[in-house]
Image: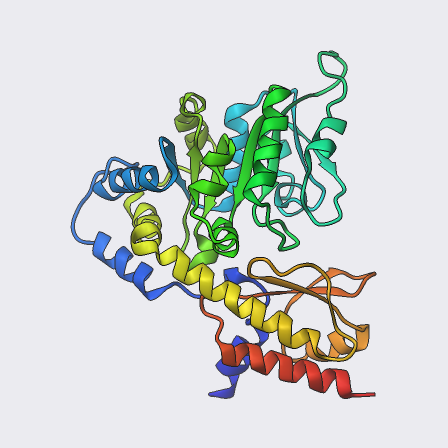
Length: 351
């Protein structure tokens, strides 16, 4: 009986940071919020305290807790767009690849997805996509959306984000950030959260917590507070309004109290660095992209990947190139990393 759970944990260990458990401090915060009665729909003390804490962290913002990242992204975009408008994003963007067409269906917008070498948009790529402006036969660009870190694990520097914001604003567009792993980017850059968002000219942010030790909770953050007026209604219509919001807010509040986010993200990033450094020393293995947050992408011979999948579950990112993705989380241990690398060495040594 004991081998079953142990094997299952080993199998899923590096598949996604979504597979990790809930941080004990977050569970304690949920339990503390569970005492007695509290107003529903965000009129509770935890949600009010979260608003204050978010303003300490991000500046003069309006904050709206939501259930999940896709819901946050989609409702944020729907709030600032008309159905005849378009979002410019990288072709690898989560909103383009992994949200089942939710932005198109719910917001009614078109996604203009651009190929990139490293998952990152540039001002030149954005400017090149600005076609048909004012032409009634074309969708009208309205939002530039970036993922921080990108789906390839690369991180936008503050200068890169600022340049994108300036390019967007010059064209009358807004800049949205999908920040499901924003804390990992900040730790990787050695900055605070505001320094890579509001200070760079970001207009709207989807702030992630579920991948960083929360049971389930994200937040839509408006740096342009004039854009937030419609969000109350869009969030409700978009099925992202929690009745017992105190339990979502309590989690986000705990993540931001005492900089728990630095601890969770810092550990995940450190484990990714350890994994990348060790894997790079295995013959036939190549690290495919810079490891700047908590994702490790490696190119493996097909036979090696097949053998490794007998004991571990992970995503094959690019089948043609043989690139797979390993994710580290707040719960990943150094021993976990070392065991994976040992398994990788054994799989690579077989003829």
